[in-house]
Length: 308
Image (cartoon, rainbow, N blue to C red; front, side, top):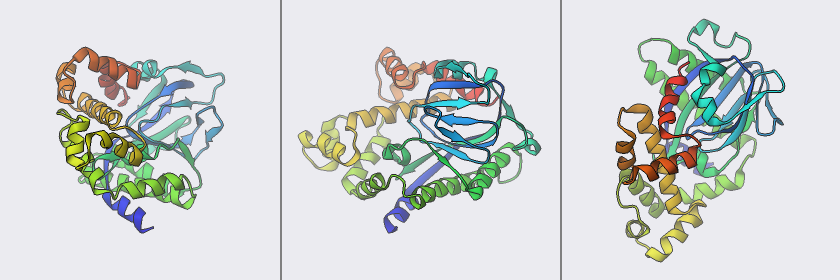
């Protein structure tokens, strides 16, 4: 348990969004994807993930780790319209409508609330993505459900201290998810592996260097210098501890930062590509669409649609 406490203490949780949504049209998104962690609370109606066998019932929560492509189904009607993630993002206002009346949260039919957030160990590595765990349903946990609803209400209200309260309660939600995983004995082997490599100081040095110099030279030669190992060994060393080779990890981090800049700045796609280490804008755009299934410009538009 001490190892898990250390991981929790090292977690940096960043709240992104919280919304209450009413489903206008039943749909299945065949390749739903986002870099952020999603926690959904179903108030009324139906939600399911994967092939439909993982159903979310009223009062249940669905946790979808960031970086995990999944099949998501919303609504009660059958058969559902099947769309891809690009269509979903481009026309979200056809399928969802947002509710900002805090008195109606949890009371409307076909509605759910959700929180999205980051959870990084040492502010460097995505904790849940590193576990490579699938989405899962959380049942019989009214305390977590209440926390999610409180975050959504607080975020919708205009009260003093709103940002601080939202931050604290989102951290509580993430801790409750980790507690649920531990209490249910889920992903034990992966948690044990991660608790080991999160303590490796050379690996932490690599993570920190990548985070600080995302747009610079992140060749295996440079990483080998940081970890004080040979260039021939650094790739093997990194993959042995994390399950992914360093250049794939770096590309994911660069794309994650690109999404953050798309959503929070007015910088051009060319500027963003260069800032995260891509000198060739066309190549950056190709890699972006290959990873996320949509062009970078549509990912920028996505944020306004999430405010429906």
